Length: 212
Image 1: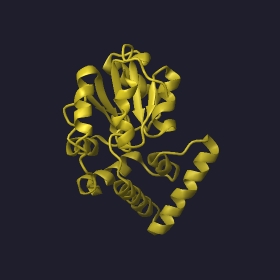
Image 2: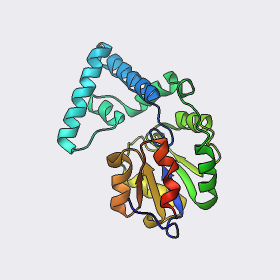
Image 3: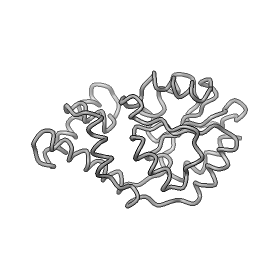
Image 4: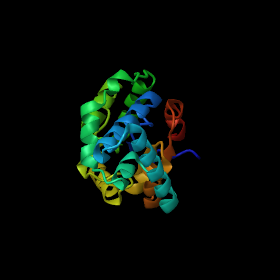
């Protein structure tokens, strides 16, 4: 994508999981916790739950043309976002999987001196706070917008408006950074926000190249 003139951008809205860090083992653990939740909900085995989730993803994609979030899959199968995240909060231990990347910390420090930074995530606030702290990134973000603010998953137009309002930014002033275009970036871009697709730490570290 072309460079972004920083004269118009005053804030950066980061997704968390898969954007500010990437951990396939932790992502797999999240999927397993969700499968365990569905298995308990339906009274079936873990393998049966995983098969149901795979089928639900396929149906969602056929109906909407986008890959659904894990929360959307659970809703499709009759689950509750609140209950799913209660399982995540009780069972997940991000500290066992994540590795602090010391290159990211000075990047966030530099960006926080130039821009209003926040996190907008489909994760819950408790886990998000733990992850951000463990990565050494606490103190750089003015706000954390999490799924338990409204118990609705991204993309959510009303929550997008709340993010912009809380930051005091017009759409053209807020750069959205995320690893899933359909989930994190499509709606902000349609609203008039610049976007940056970021699916690795290396891409994250190149963000400054686009903010000249």
